[in-house]
Amino acid sequence: MSEEPLIISYFKRLFANPKDTRMGRIEGAEVEIKGELCPRKGKKDQVFLYGKIADDKLKDIKFMCALCDPHMFVAADILCILAVGKDKDEVSALGKVNFEELLGGQSPEGYEHFERARELLVLGMLGRKKIT
Image 1 (cartoon, one colour):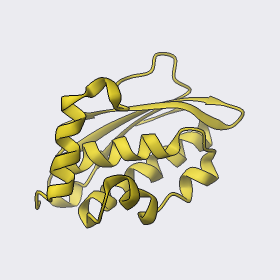
Image 2 (cartoon, helix red, strand yellow; image 1 turned 30 degrees about the vertical axis):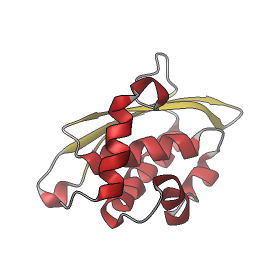
Image 3 (cartoon, one colour; image 1 turned 45 degrees about the horizontal axis):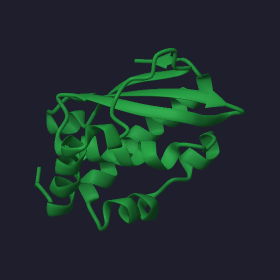
Image 4 (cartoon, one colour; image 1 turned 45 degrees about the vertical axis):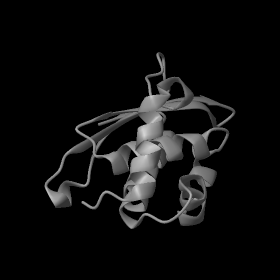
């Protein structure tokens, strides 16, 4: 894993101001997802996504991570910021340009984490249930 300057800078901001992030848990979430990501690298990033839905759109979404590297924390925060107010099709359409715009540049590994978390979120929105 390369520790890219943009990822590390964003990661540090997450923990400097945690109240200004999407980190946390939502009690009574309609969408509750636990996913192990990046197993191909022998790591076990575990991301937890919690969402509230109104009119088929994400009204609120937060995340928590366990055993995650900085790339996953950053990707999850960016995904949650971008996903608020969107339906499953709009979330599914979020891509590299959206990710890089919020990050402030490129991160292939960060975007890979973003894609995997986005796929889990869309699956969770389809069923509006807990996915583990």
